Image 1 (cartoon, rainbow, N blue to C red):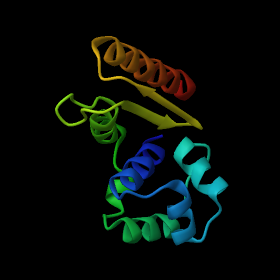
Image 2 (cartoon, rainbow, N blue to C red):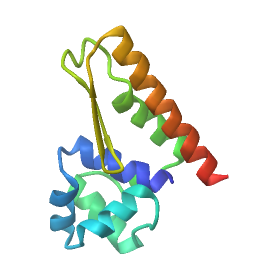
Image 3 (cartoon, one colour):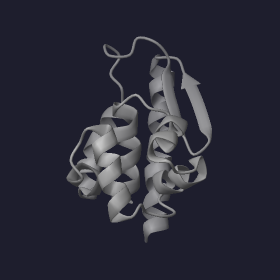
Image 4 (cartoon, rainbow, N blue to C red):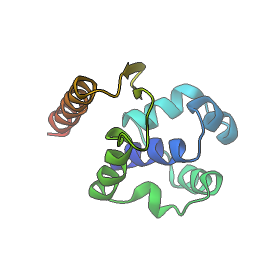
Length: 124
């Protein structure tokens, strides 16, 4: 699952949409979505291509899950200072926007916790 999270994280860091990255790699959007969902994994050659396109090392794509979780948490738990606008979650075909209020942060955190728990259950 770390590869999937790393691909998604690095794509977002590069400011690319799934469509953008799929086109640059010459793969279908469905293939990229399966990679990011952890349903399949890219081949070694594709990992090298991904790394080159995203200007990162291949290790950043295949790094361990703990490191990916730390980086992902930065995206999932935005600070009020960094994001004065809406709290936005995008993933798995869903987009949720919440206001940056106490209730908004509470709901956002519950959403993330549920997703993390679901991923842990799927891996078990």
